[in-house]
Length: 478
Ligand code: NDP
Image 1 (cartoon, rainbow, N blue to C red):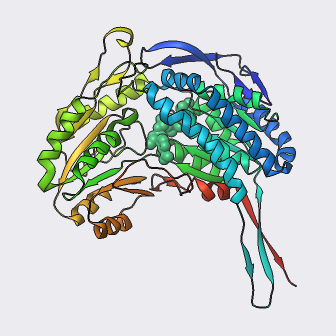
Image 2 (tube, rainbow, N blue to C red; image 1 turned 45 degrees about the vertical axis):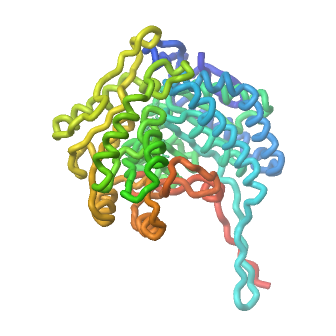
Image 3 (cartoon, helix red, strand yellow; image 1 turned 180 degrees about the horizontal axis):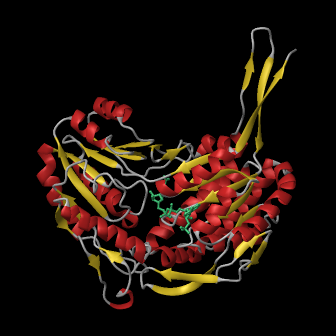
């Protein structure tokens, strides 16, 4: 049973109601989640507001120690966290164990140490007048995160908000609440003062909306779909809340004929299908230069067919379950759309029914599609599943035009051994993150986020520390 974490205690929702939590690999309800609403948010905000004077006055070194302690407790219980993430989300256990949970630990460790190097500006004028910038915590922060990388993205928001002296009211996705619940237990054990972090579970239209609407929540950090981001912005912007929105993507993977082919193929299988394609950074539109199109198509399809789909708890599984039946239906409907738009399914294309324990689970075969124009709906709308399309191109200009045709601008991948071209394309491509000859290589100090409909603001490193603080210029006439 999942409980809310408010004012340092684990509690039921005020409504006393719960809803089911499903294991996507079996489709069975295996737990219950509090059906919270604006009354729980009110309690959480009150707790956060009361804790703020103490927490914001706590020396950064002390806050840092507490974050390190939380990190060490997650590390101690890594196996339990990884299993919970796997069962809740459907992702392969080895992925949760080697990527999701270690990254959540790293998020706490990283910001606990980054704060020591955080400095502010000073500007001296010609007559000797000095301006310096104070950066103070904002107050109560709202954090709303999605289901695809549950603890990884949740802690990516919470850690920088806390280390800068803010108190937080956070909502994980209602579809994947388990590791956020385990985190609340870790915070209690670590001795995080009550009210500093509050985790409220429940539906987006109730709990998420109440966070957007609450006048005492001064800033919102949100990761999720573009439509939800727009809804939050429409409520929060007129209230002049500070907003960081990390939204959807339709990322291009541009493969030039002169690339390091073996490395590219290996990585492209990952950038297409890792975590069932449910990573906002997956390269779902693959543009291939014509001379290697046929070879690439054959090799990618061959490699994709070898991916092992099934029980996420099994060691050898490459592809786990899709997070919910609703999302599975959405992804399948896009495969159907691709068919009606004239696409040719080269492999996959259907729901997958494993044998045994997972026979009723929500699985989709990794799917490769070709023959669609770059501007059709399949190639423009976010699918967020194990589906990629292949699009041939002749020149660099063609590739750039098609890559940039999207309303989204989150991430891109470029494969070429021509250094000049790599930099030229990187400069012209309209995405917030560009990977050249690699994918998902993350240095936590770098700005992370998207352009266009993929969001506003950047997270990571100094960008996050700046977002969670209010700058104040002090001008001293000497
Ligand atoms: P959603 O936008 O549906 O949900 C994200 C979070 O917002 C959830 O906690 C959700 O709650 C909540 N929410 C839903 N409606 C509202 C509302 N009206 N007001 C406030 N909060 C609300 O996204 P998904 O969870 O489906 O995640 C997938 C999306 O996230 C994809 O578009 C993906 O690209 C994007 N994403 C972006 C990333 C980035 O860094 N740019 C990284 C990872 C994912 P509930 O679960 O209860 O609906």
